[in-house]
Structures are given as structure tokens and as C-alpha cells.
Amino acid sequence: MSRRAVFRFVRHTRRRVEGVAPVCEVFCAEPGCGERSGAGAEAGVVEEWALRHAGRTGHGEYRRVFTDRARVTREG
Image (cartoon, rainbow, N blue to C red; front, side, top):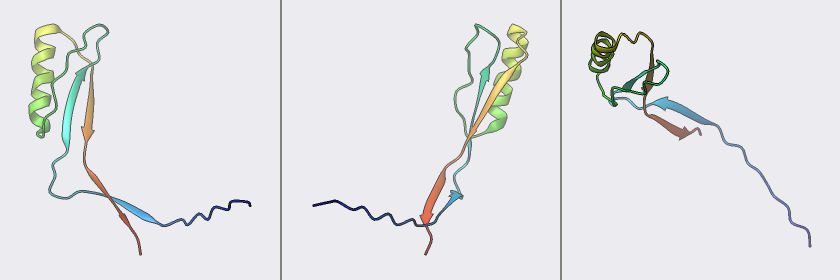
């Protein structure tokens, strides 16, 4: 007896979750440093960390990561 699979494709939509603040984190991109701000809901706080770190170390390049939450819903 042979087996048969039936695939049914359903459209989905992805949207940002309203009311949930994005999270920001800053990483020092200078070779060998590896320091980071830690994740925070307020971008200004982690940006201040980068400025203080630059002032203390002279490091000038940073990687910023912004993360938000999304919800996937089935259409129809």
C-alpha cells in the first residue's frame, strides 16, 4: 500500500505586537573588547552606555541590536 501526503498551504501574517517596547542592546565592536551594555527597553540608556564606554576606552565602533516581538496570525 502506498502512502500519500496532502499539503495545504495557508496564508499567515506577521505583525509587531503593539504595547510591547522594542529591546535595544549595544556591543563594542573593537577587536578583543567584547563589552556590551546589556539589554534595555530604553534605547537612550544603552546609547549612554556606549558614550561612557567610548570615553573610558577610546573605542569608537559599536554594534546596535534592536529586537521586537511579533505575532503570527492565520488569515481566513
